[in-house]
Image (tube, rainbow, N blue to C red):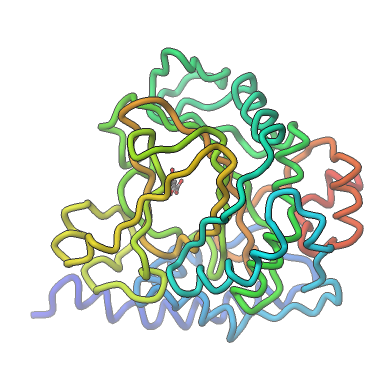
Length: 340
Ligand SMILES: O=C(O)CCC(=O)C(=O)O
């Protein structure tokens, strides 16, 4: 009798074809649909069990952009986050290992401003069910505090990070297709409630919100092995043993049993450290055992097909207005904020 797992494996094939047809139809519309049907989202995630490269493969085969602005990116040398002379090394490093940590850290005035915003802006205590409020940093109650995108974007330096043309350039070269900026995430991790590792993304997992995407992280606090580094299984963006491919959380023990522990890399660095990470590879946050960690992240993807996306309202800075004028397709989610 066929096992549940082998039945699931067979079902992933028709789900892959459904995903291809739905993604093709989604990306052929002149403006992206407001959302992707929930059943289609499920099929996409399930088809992505087949191999870590399947999402990129589907995207390259069926996602086509007819907008002449697709692929147009503002001058990457205007970035205050990414040195232009590290762009080639970043594309190469991400292709090889799944991540790249930039040699140069960001100016302290920028990291201080972003951290000050995160200290005073309302954040959501994950799993607590309490109203948003500034993090009680000296006495946190939960393991993770998230700032929503609209609140994050009240900070001019976060807007600058989100619209960075050098990161867009790296993502576009790495993914080999036009990219748009599709998400900003901003969160604290603390020493509290290690038992919430699952909901706090502190167990290994792959991201599957989109087919083909790349993330950039910046640390806003100094990160050591004890204060919650981002952890990545080197090379897992290219290949994963079957036992680690399914959607959902994976224990350290499962990675050890697969004989891959030597490839596990903790990404530490001072405040201002930036990393490009292909989070289709297996990754997690490590639960801090002393101090806390503040990280800001953005994501570039080849289409808004997949998880529901936001079109946040905020007051754009002059820089963001200029960047929107130079690369409206990349920053299309911010059209309402800029024009409205
Ligand atoms: O906190 C981290 O370093 C990883 C977070 C993560 O993987 C997630 O939010 O999905």
